[in-house]
Image 1 (cartoon, rainbow, N blue to C red):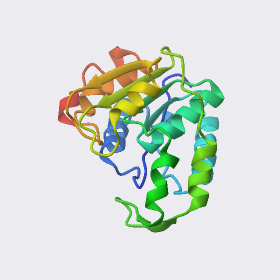
Image 2 (image 1 turned 180 degrees about the vertical axis):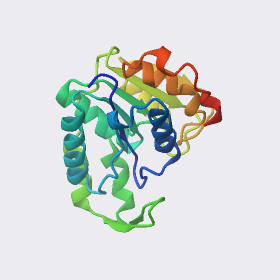
Image 3 (image 1 turned 30 degrees about the horizontal axis):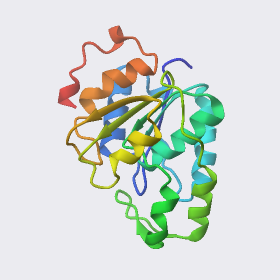
Length: 202
């Protein structure tokens, strides 16, 4: 389905996050809600990938939009299926970071608590792929002020891709709404469809 988007939220996030909500609002305004999926991902990577595979099969060949850990998932799936991906402050090799964070976790939006185990870390490691080499299929949006992930890791890993690096910002990606036209364009949605929308008012 041309113009379809699969939004993949990050670690301990949810469809109620600000970026996901803003994207849902815009797709609704465009009458394209049926071409968007924003699944509430299970905390276990194997379950989450199963949910995302299901969403891909429903949408056909969507643009994968992944934030943080979602960017890691999106990279794996884009390489597996030859899809386009737009990554926002993506996590690189997250299994290497999680070793020190095993134990009880809490979802920032749903208040659900769960246990991060070695099996989660192993499952994440299994999803790692060689660094993508296709600047036509990948856009990587980074902000240098990301307080959670060192943007330079993603800058290095995705160096063969189309990088957009903004000074400042934070892990949530400040000014996301203003960048939505670029995302819609990358997804194959014509500018005439959204030129009347004031993205700064989202």
